[in-house]
Image (tube, rainbow, N blue to C red):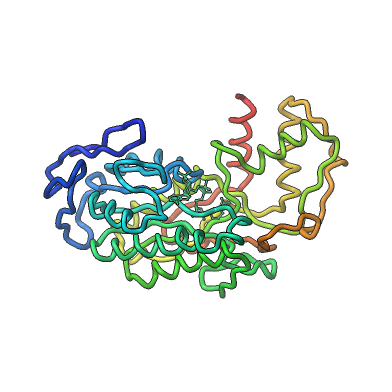
Length: 341
Ligand code: NDP
């Protein structure tokens, strides 16, 4: 089987293999592939967009054992991975001819999106639509991530996949439009709506709270937004597991809510992080009673946030026979890792 070679820019150069029909430039053209199952999982070619994001980074790890992985970032050179270049994205998909397209790329700057709606729409809606059309035309699967921000955040019950959507922000609207484009294309897909994503790599809420707790003697944290902090590693592992099942059961194609178990507020989340660090011997400046809960209105931001971000994950757990662990287990694991550094 052919395999991509690591280069300075990532997994980009594709070496010839029996499954390819013809070479185009430094990549290989689409081979004809029968629709449906029957192909061994390890014979799969996977094209990943957004390899450098929180989720994309973990997907590079979790998808690698499933087959041949071509992973692109927005700045990849030989193959276009930039979602503002829709023609380039089409060219990339046709050149790689993947069995599975995984889209971890997104415009995720929620507040900035309010002043850049056209760019957010291109990346979150038009590009996934283009990927979906290509997937439909070639018989590939499309794996995509969406968000609790498609809901208005009312009530206090976990949102189900069938509940009415009503995004409050440009980010939420463009992510919803992306979902709709995928549904409309008719391609086989898995869309995972998730919430409050954190990764060990890069910045995240827990790291910010730790830094502030060491520096400041008083902290205020929002306590009227609830959700489930969900690890990028959990998302990536569940994606790989669900994909293995879906490849054998195409009827599993659809929309799923995917978040860690339980729920919390940003305030309680901050308390857990700071208490954990204190117990681990980190010199924390802020006293427990100096961490104050405040309402959302205390931090006015351009994009409104849903207050209730809870997601009901029963459909995913039943369909793929998976257990989603409580959010604290992934969080304390990440804290242990970063505090040991
Ligand atoms: P990140 O912000 O960590 O990563 C987003 C990725 O998108 C980056 O790697 C970035 O690539 C890429 N990207 C941005 N602009 C472009 C572009 N023009 N072309 C190609 N790629 C681009 O996001 P997450 O990993 O946290 O999010 C993954 C998915 O989960 C997204 O669909 C997001 O909407 C969803 N989600 C995230 C939540 C969260 O709390 N973070 C909550 C709910 C859902 P580069 O760095 O190379 O520019």
